[in-house]
Image 1 (cartoon, rainbow, N blue to C red):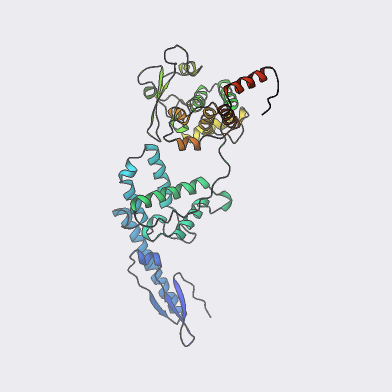
Image 2 (cartoon, rainbow, N blue to C red; image 1 turned 180 degrees about the vertical axis):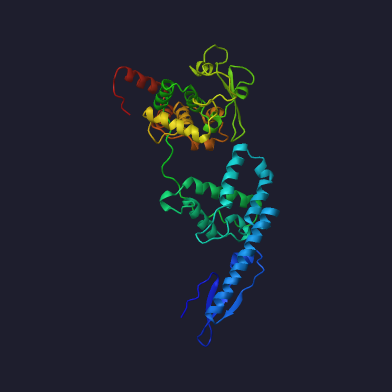
Length: 402
């Protein structure tokens, strides 16, 4: 007996024990308005297969026509595509900083183009937004982690989390008052935390840049570490913008947050440099280009990928640990400021973080900070005479008994 094999066919046993074949409209197609209806194909296998093949062809033609209509007329009402398009026109999105808008566009566009399951024929963007349930969100997240290759060994934790975070915000702002399926997605966190750059490795890297004749990369590292700035801002600094009023102040308009920073290069009321060596380094770079940081080979501004490639080559020559990346300069800067006892507000005035919570995220806890806390607590709890006696004991080389 020939086995009937075709998409969307179901077998049902009748009262007399015989098998009847049915062609069933896929649920997603039915909800999307497919004009075809579920049809009884009868008991004959050959005729059932022939009719099912014809109906599947009609279904595919409807899908193609719907896709062409979407391209010509825009997203279908109620679809995730339409929901995201509505989000892009919302002031909630428009009022975000340029860098933040770019982040949303990249992650949302990637989400819309994703095939949410191995057997899916429609991209996620064409699904009905209101029918997305928590189980669908969980399935989407797993696929987003593994990418197109569906390779569990090559999971990209950051990509999956970013896509879910962006979709969660769209649902919160565009479908208010309705359950948000993205709220319950369990995010897998990367246990390995970013390592902050230390001044020892920073000096080692800058020295190698100078030896290799790459003053542009040396300056990029200087600005990222000493100014505690993001790589995306550093590589796009322009002479006109950064020195728009005078040569003794470095102005920064951060792209991600829109925050404006004003960093003095000369200490107010003195002729002493705030960052020794920076002015000389800036003067060594000819102002023939719009951008301050340019490539050694072509004199053009760095792309993000090119910056990281050149950085890695120089870092390897300088024996910098492989887990230290260019973005770790900013991380190291905030950690060093915390070690020095700077307050969160003081750190924010240089790094440009908008909240103290964000400063805390990018500041690694260190032994120096622990000792600062212990020493401040001891001094607070001891009397002035006791402190003087402790100091005198140290000077005499005696061990302090607590």
